[in-house]
Image (cartoon, rainbow, N blue to C red):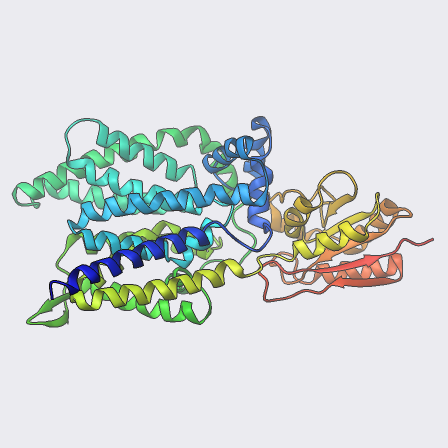
Length: 513
């Protein structure tokens, strides 16, 4: 037995290292070109600062991540690898910080390592580490927020300042983090009031109430950096929203774990394991050698469930009331809490079961992660390749809807082609979401096609389009028919693949002679 344990320890260490290496490697590679959200983010972040803030008012996002990416691109360039590498850096930096946080919360090294392995092999974390968006940064901020909350029992002003800095950074990175801050503030207020009326008994309860009071002060201070942005936020709330999808509904909350577990068959198995170990982490304990599910006994586990699902539930409710959309990527605010809860669940089980189960979860996670990053996110690369090879200077490139524009425009830089978007006839480099639905409802495919005939002159028109977008429905196909009438013959070069997130068809219309 003494000889077996060192060997087992070596195997466990080798396995953890292998998962970390594989997880980091997956975070550094994605096969697909940038799709709409990424290309739009890079286009806005590339602007001079005096134009960047106005562009964000039209986009509907807060500014912090865009400012950081702006600085990053000044140093490392605008290429796909560079801008996605910015997200990968945040995700990799989360790994050691997560271990330290879980070690501090649980008092267990094994729970800490399990959580790190789960995060390293998380398909969701891998997916968004390869996307030029703010979600990896938000995940890191939630971990830093855990440190800030854990430090509130310490004396002095630094813990309050830590909460303020993280809260301010979250609010200025993505608006869905406001729901996380609301849940946190409500919990702190409840604890502070219970202390005030004497319902938090004992020295530990009194310390917890004092920490909650300090935390409320930190949240209040964290709102200060948001105040200069408040007019833009109000403008966005009224004029932008999320017009690209239908209003959120509560079924979205139930599907959150599916989004965390990734796609394909490995993701389905992983989702089942996630739910099982989360249930054990929340309500499981071992009695007389048997696993028993009952009333949760740990405050940490209850808090993890609240932070994993509470903000998402609140956000979906608000989105439904305001007829705004929800996307799976918004659930980044709850990912870390959920993975820590799973780590607690695996740690409840006997040591002999922990190792193979962590191995099983990690393998399924990595396989699902490979599935996530190997998927084509857009057909913009195919479209741009054809136009670059066969297009002539002065040719016109039209995209419908304008949501296809940023991805294609990024791959057709310079002034070789004249590029416009339906219905605005504007440069397709960015989508202006201001009063988007009303603008699209007023669009006229026939009038646009007539203008296009005069604009194109004796040059070829390349038309990239896709139907099914919420505010346009089948207008892009109608525009194709109108262009056919104006130009006559046409040829299809790229056909839409509906399995791709951002699919599109490319048609060439030869100029009338």
